[in-house]
Length: 362
Image (tube, rainbow, N blue to C red; front, side):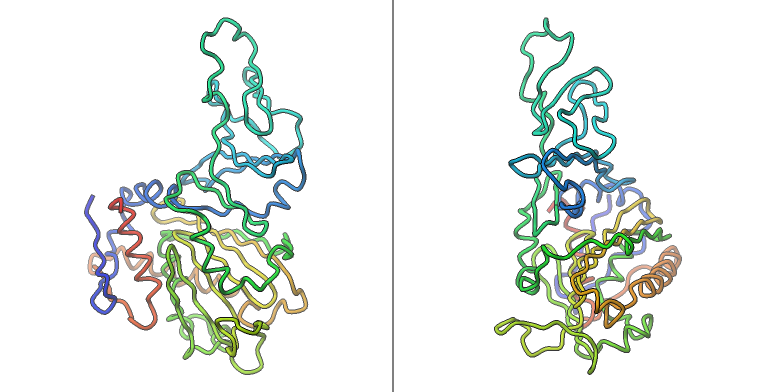
């Protein structure tokens, strides 16, 4: 595979080339090199496994990683288990429920809700059985204020990823936000997943693409803050628009903050508005097709429809149109690489460096 190198100095750096977004080899390599090595958001624990005894099957990034997972809650909390029977690899649980045991429908192997092997018919003469590997595999799981994150083989702890969010929005009662299923959205986009993230990671395009959003945020005070494993875009409001009530001593005290846009490498977006939280998960399907899932968690319903988070559907459709246009453009034989705006594209520069590092194994 062609090595990709992004200059660490944004003033000198060039973007990833168009060939990056066209390569099936690159696309496949990033599934293991990026997605499998990072934490992925699974959803709201209260919705997925609301009580002790509840289990819920989840496919992690269907169409890309395709890892069958099983969330299981007992008196000790929530676990993330493999949803694959350790006998012959059959999928174990097909729908959410509250079973007394986990029973494989293929040959009857049984497991406790903690994933431990319990019994197996017709195995009385098997020697050295059961073994530890006959238990269901357990994946790392982190519960952040009721939001569940899992990792297949994470290269770092979840706390390191979430610390920057806590610094800015730790004053918000995120654990009290409530999922509003009526606001769930799924969009299919005819473009590479990384192009969608490129677009998200800069406010540079706001005056040109998002006229209504530009009318409520102060573009001249738009800011990007980089941190380990991700970044934050801060949108300040124009006069009269809805803003956060920041507590005394907050790092942004005195600023009229309309939105905090957090991005966690490689594909998670946590957008905080005065009304609550919108979580966006970018799911790669192919080199030119992406699925994006939105879920909204509402805290102040009276503020819905106002400010920077007032019309997310319109903003999304505007983003899709320009990202699909870029997808068509990067196929051009006349396009190679671009340059970064040092003041507006710090997040994109960071993302490209992280992608290059993931491909090189660094």
